[in-house]
Image (cartoon, rainbow, N blue to C red; front, top):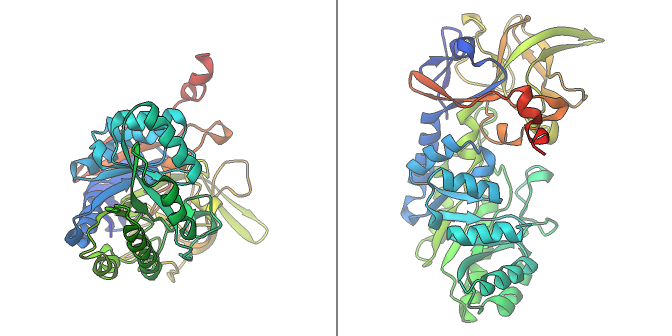
Length: 428
């Protein structure tokens, strides 16, 4: 799934030892990404769904560095954006505006005007109120835009409650029962051409059946709308496809496509996909350095310089990330990453950060080789919803980001300084 491998007891990203990169001056904590892994994951998804000739819109929110966006644009990717800032990033990276879809439940008038100026492909509409506002703005500007109505198919993707978006009780989209009424009220407007249906049921979704159920409901809706005289030419089936946080957890793009493609074959629809996590998660790691080893009661803590302000997923979602030393030695070499390891002389520890919160942890109850001060740890599958969700909590400067290609690497985001923390405050 990725190009992070152990050779002679030492972790490599593509053809570079991770320890060598860190010691060369990039320091810790640092996100390290594999360019080839990004390309291969995108290519596999594109190949799996090739029969449908889809527009594959990379979900910028999962990993937003402009250098990575540019890398995927060069592969032919469109972009899925959810804010004016993400649209700005996409355009700066050279994305084709006609292959940009714009979702999000609270688009401001300023953001809507920016998207109209950019001539994006589709607005993904989250509510009747938003649609009415878009019609107002577009008519005032005497222009026409395309839009897809986001529909909640009331399908349970069986994922975390914070990332379930396809049920009725979410802030996103409209109930499938309301969709026909929405089209009846707005679907013949000349300023906003309501010509598509958008689905996004949640993330990560490590099963195909929820997608099948959602798409079948969407196709029934499209058939009914076409009978009512509406021209529906686009179906955006969203993203949320899983990634391997532990070995064998996620399905391949091919496995999703084998059940989804037959449903969409011959439907006369332009298909849009919005993958993010499945492309980015296993293309990046967070490298952090051990500061102290501490025993408290029956628990042993490995305190590192990476924190919830760098990677919040464990604290926010109770998410699992595999953690292992960067250079554990040959006796602890791994051929694959596993959730439970039974190796000699391991110690059960919690890996925690320096932020002043009990919830600041990267891993709990993990069996690791003996760790000492200064040792580097790799937090795997950190390429999605890692750096992009970082904060300045406790006035901690953001980590650096590094992109590896073959035997070379380059910094794609420098490490922040204390001056960066107060720059916006001093400029007022």
